[in-house]
Image 1 (cartoon, helix red, strand yellow):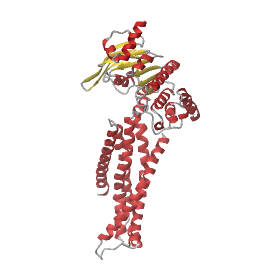
Image 2 (tube, one colour):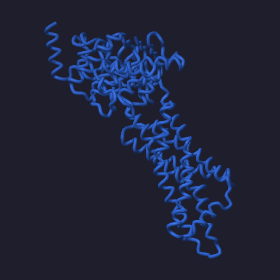
Image 3 (cartoon, chains in turn orange, purple):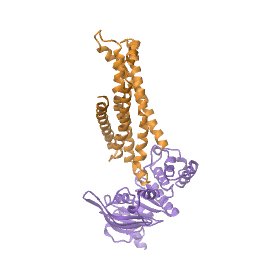
Image 4 (tube, rainbow over the protein chains, first blue to last red):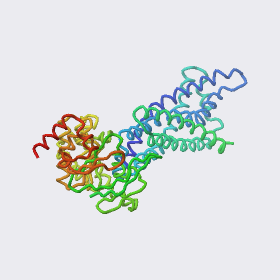
Length: 219
Length: 254
């Protein structure tokens, strides 16, 4: 079981690092540019660019937006790998041997995704860093103003809120795609359809749970 | 030995198995034959415990499966080896790891002991060189042999094979048939094969059960199948000109 968990950590977490880092860095930059370009009034201080970027990245972009992307990347991977095992009778082989196939296939993925907040914390850091890079190279505001804005009125509970969401999303990312893969019927075409369906339902579940958690925790 | 009594299985309002009673003998290759849709696969899956059935009973060496606790059912399943139609090898593992898999799950052998046992059974199916290959690098016949090696690695009491010859050329099919029969006799296993390959029926059918429309229509062996006058069996088995001639020659000689 330990080997399976380590393999799933490699596939699901470490294997996602590149795409998460790339998207976070550039979306952080775009958020900064758009915020800076929309501040026209001279009465609004430039450090608000950093403040807005930090709030956007920590509260929504890193936990929710990245999770939607992960529903596509990790979710499709889970559904198609389990679905292919179903189609090629590998799950039947496990059951015939007396192995609890759900436990064997889904449990390691659920445990591996407990490290998902680690990925999100990297996304948060790189998002804010991307904003700073945009300020530096684009000249939208000074780097010192940006850093000042990033530190302004920081509420640590917002991080707790973001990580609570992340844990819930990690559970959804492990279970919904596994369900769609495990209970699929048919052949290769149905594996593709199951992957698409799992992406849609995982995204819906993430968006709805995001709303409910925000309502419960922040309001 | 596996004893089946009055087995009924339905899907919704469709009855697929309609009161099958038979036995599968130890140390023999028992074949289930019949046309597509006759209920062979459902019967095999009921025997494997993959499909629940409505009424009837299946006992394995005197143990009625449905009367066993979940833990005992798992224990019984660990004594079952299965060769799936497509091999069902775990494609993320090498052939060696596939063969070691049941040992890792059900025994406390050390890694070197497992390696030795895996090499031993791979040698038995003449695939020692394939130990580090992945299933995708192996041919259809090799995959079937690996599946057989995985099925017998844990010294099972029961071996099930779902159409082990499908998709194989005639020569490889005979190799697989002979291998299954040799293993059955060598290890005194109760082997049940689901097949509609008439060569297998003639070559290794030490006991044959013919299913038709969910009923057991005939029971015999590869010797008695030549002499039967059961119309359903003769229409199915001797549907080709070649087998009609073979049968005629056998009857003329005997």
